[in-house]
Length: 136
Image 1 (cartoon, one colour):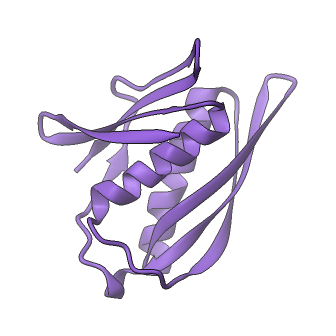
Image 2: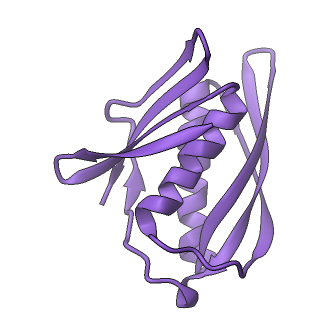
């Protein structure tokens, strides 16, 4: 699983690949953390995240939006993201966790929001790929 930060006019984009959809979602979330902070300390407590949605794209959007919300409410940078996605009757559920590094321990850049602009989630010959643009 891997991600790359991509320049995108005034925004930032993350492109990720992985062997499974779960891995790609986690990689995009790790890319979000990297877009906000260059150096992440080892401190921070894990917290749980749960999201349900009607499509893979909506699940990815809602999960990333929830991580930004957790950053704002808890005052933490969500890193070391671990996710498990299940699909049942065309409904998708994500159960995950992240380590919340206190924002006071990092020099973080603000990411305002995740966007649907140019979002792409696709199955590939090698697994999954996602491309997500964030408003900065």
